[in-house]
Image (cartoon, rainbow, N blue to C red; front, side):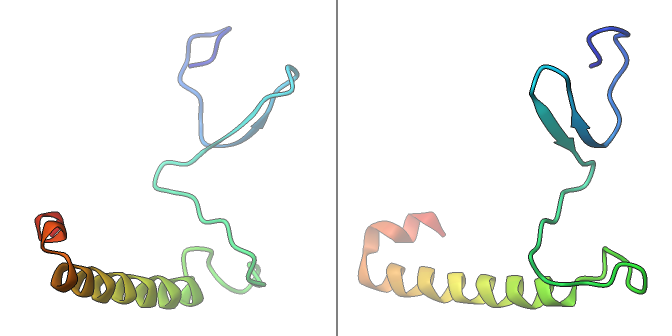
Length: 78
């Protein structure tokens, strides 16, 4: 909420005069260090990020399975 008007704030970046800042995003925020030409590609089209995320999820699933086999207490986490 905006302190002066009482209206809900929009989305995006905000830098205030009291040395604070904020970032608001409705459906998430992607911060990446990969070079992308946003003039020719839509920002929601991020195949590099999806590829890395898929590999990370697969790795996490296999690690959880291995932990479950080695430690019966972790089976409750599944």
